[in-house]
Image (cartoon, rainbow, N blue to C red):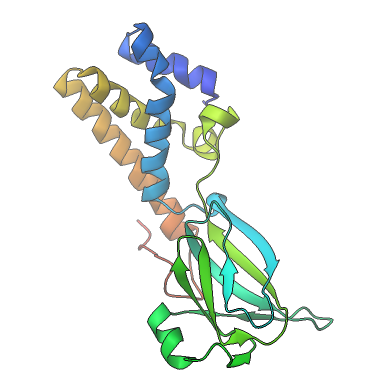
Length: 215
């Protein structure tokens, strides 16, 4: 069955048979913690986002979206009638500094690097305003705040057992039962990872995208 926040919360209470107020008030935290583990374990296409922006002439930095975690692709979108895409290469900041030691060296950006948590550095420095398209990975909205989620709908057992692991750890539940929940959670995670990093990613233009053999 697909979960909503209400049905998932009720299931956690039913499985644990705990209705103590402090425990119940922490159920959102159990779910969010499980979601964080899931989101860090797999890179689902459903978690990707896409934005376009404009780089500034003579300025070699580009501000990232506030929810940015990692990049899948960065491209300069041409101003011609075909909107030709020129994909940029991900390089270390040191490489870009070495290749373009002077910010005054300008041209169409060919490389990007993660300068800090909120900024890309571009090389060479843009000689005009270019439209940049960023395809990136971000945490999806939690089922706690959104009422539904992709994992809760498509892989409900993964979210359930992940939440139960968090709940039983908090409640210091029976070790055997906790171990059983952990095993079921890991089994679900592996199935989800097989979909996300194998079957949903038969090829990647850039080798920076992790891919695992299909099981």
